[in-house]
Length: 157
Image 1 (cartoon, rainbow, N blue to C red):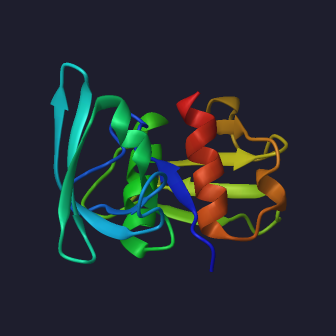
Image 2 (image 1 turned 60 degrees about the vertical axis):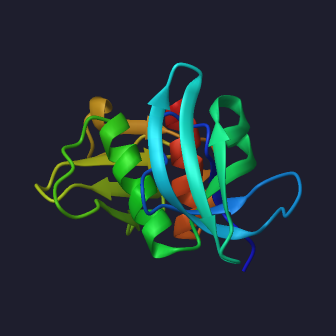
């Protein structure tokens, strides 16, 4: 399976425990876990513990060198929580559900309280306009990680 990722530069995406991969430079593709994330004047500071036992710090714009790994269930949970926060859903103790709509026209993000948002290439007939997010190409995707990445990138713009 090829890596499906989101850039570490998306504000608020990376959290302690997030699975990441090195997305550029030396050791591209190496896996690791975020052990520390904090806000700094020049952006975020993140510390990564790599799978080989080494660790490294990334500051501000250097965070483009790390990406959230959506091939890992924890990465999917992290991205779903981030997306829910960005579209105004309340995030509880569990990550929101992310699933392809039964009609195949898009993807749904559902919070634990039942509130949801729709991400599709066309508007959904059963969702109020305020709950729709048009994302070109998302309806054709069958991989949940790829669809979630596309929705996150669309919302981040």
